Image 1 (cartoon, rainbow, N blue to C red):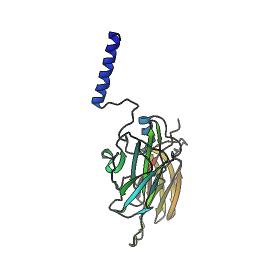
Image 2: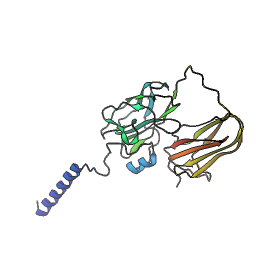
Image 3: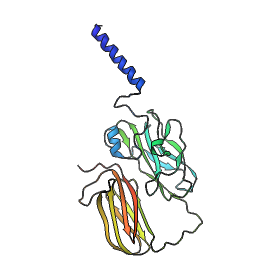
Length: 277
C-alpha cells in the first residue's frame, strides 16, 4: 500500500471513530426517537423523505374496550403483518389536548418533549414485532370521546398513518343537566382526517351562526356557514379545501363557531394528503 493510501485509510478510520464518540450518525440513519409530537405527514416527509405510503400498511389500532371510565386501564394494541422500527402513539380529546398515560415497555420511551407519558415513542432503531400491546390509563376526570393517533415507520422512507381509533366515555348514572339557552356544542370527526371531516354543532336557541376554518397561523381559509340557524343539531362537511377550491393538504386547522354571543374553537388535524401545488 502506498504512503498516500495508508494516510487516507488512517484519516477515514479517525473520522469514523470521531463520529462514533460524538454520537453522529449518517444522514440516512434511522433515529432512536420520534422527531415530532403530532401525526404530521409534512414533518415526517422532511425528516424521513418520501410521502406517506397509501393505505395502512396492514397496521390497525384496537382497544380492549370501546369505552372508558376515568382512571380505567385499557390495553391498546397495534396489529400488523410486519415488524416496524419507529412509532408515535397518543390519545387526544376534542380540543387536541393529549390525555391519559402509557406504561412504557422496554424498547420504547415516554416523549418528554411531547408531554411525557401521555405520548409514546420508540427508543431504538431495532425492528419491533407485531402485534404489540401497550397499557394505557385513562385521565382521572372524564374527557369525552378520545382519539388515538399513531404513525408507524418501517424504515426510511417507508411509513404509514393507520386509521385513528376512537373510544367514548362510558355513560354514568348521573343525569346530565339540561342545556340552557346559551349552551353551544362543537365537534369534528374523524380527527385526524384525510379526505373529509364532519363538523357537528348545536345550539339550544336559534340565531346568527358563523362557522369558519383557520390555519395554524390564524389565517381564515374557509367559511362553512354564515347565516341564521334554528335550534338543535347541525352538520357540515369540510373537504380540506379553501374558499377558492385549493386543497390545503396536511396540517393543523382550527374550527371556529360563533353564535349567540358564544365562541367555540376545536383543533382539527389533517394527515396523508399533500397540498395542491
